[in-house]
Length: 195
Image 1 (cartoon, rainbow, N blue to C red):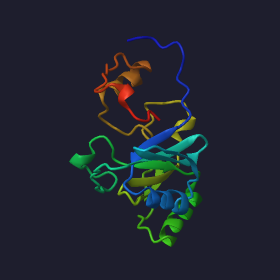
Image 2: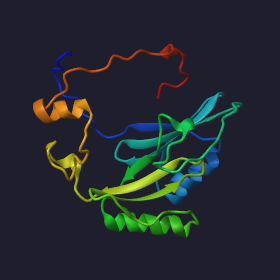
Image 3: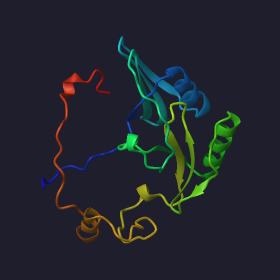
Image 4: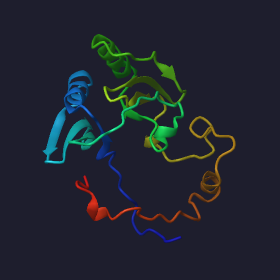
């Protein structure tokens, strides 16, 4: 395995690119219902691409393709579906329980279905969908796993009693010994908008 000279300095999600068949409804939901400010739009003859702020420099972006047949389906969060093999749901981070309850009431006030608060021990969450059928979660960390050093023996945060080999390596050495090699399945220069 190659040794990395510098740690990657992640700063959240620049954008998660999703697909919508109705950008107007998507804008009304993300900006109007969720209060995620529309911060940028791109329009080409082939597509629209809109960005909604979910935190400093963090956005959710949607493509709406012109003249493309896009199959639409909905699936709830955490429920397997063969049509969604690489995406289950998106969880948006909130500051605290008050913010979670306030968002739940806001969703209900706009007529949107939303679950009761679900207690996952380390976080609490609500679940809902957007107009595209995309499963969404809003969560706040009861125990902030991101603000502390990883203690792989801490059963509150690392509760899998039969972890995968990579986690066992992390528990023993603090690093993984091997990493996968990946390949591109297409020419990346063919992408209309690499954003």
